[in-house]
Length: 238
Image (cartoon, rainbow, N blue to C red; front, side):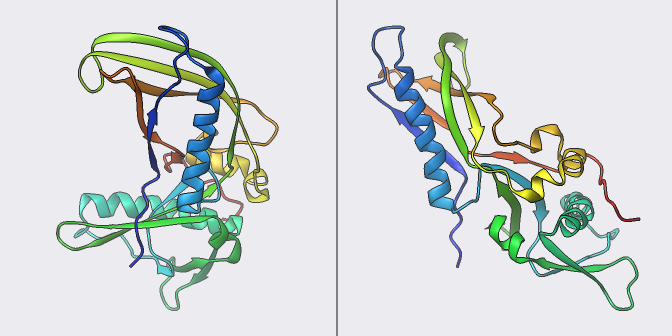
C-alpha cells in the first residue's frame, strides 16, 4: 500500500543564538532552505505550490450530485465540477464524454499531469478511503532573511507566557512550468491570485517559531502552499 507522506515539517533549532536577542540570520536562511528541500526529497513533489483538485482517484468518471450525498460529498463534487474541466483544458488531464450520458465525462492523467501530480490517501474510521490530489509546481529558493523578531505573549498558540520568533524572508521560484504561465488568468480565477508564482520575481514570506522553556526553537508548519478552488471556472470552451 502507498505510504502517506504528510507535507509538513517539524523543525528543531539549536545553536542559532548569538546573544540574548540576536539571531544568526544566515543560519536561519540555511535552515529554511533545507526544510523546503527536504520535503521535496521526501515526497517527490514537483514544487511547493499545490493546486488542490479534490478527493478523486484516476481514472475517474463524473458522478452526478445526489440527494443522498453527505455534506462532504456535495462539497467534493462541487470542487471536481470546476477543477477537472480546467486541468483537462490546460492539458494535465484527458476528458472524454460518457456514452449515452450527456454532461458526464471520463478523466485520466496525461503524461504532463503524471509529472506534476501529488497524490495521497487516508482511511476514515468507517474504512472508507479518501484520495487527495493536487498538481504541484515551483521549487522555492530562499534569497535572504529580512528580519527576525521575538515577542512573548501571556497566552500563545500552545500555552501561557509563550515566546514567538517570527522569521521574515524573501524567496524566488526556481521553475514555473509553461502550463502555469500560459493559463494564469484561469488559475487565478479559480484559486486566487496567489496561486500563480513566476520566476525572477521576489516574494516575501514569514515562518513562526516557538521558543521552548529550554531556550531552543521549535517549528511545526507546512512546507508547501496549498491552494483550494474557491473561485469561478474560467474556460475557453462553451
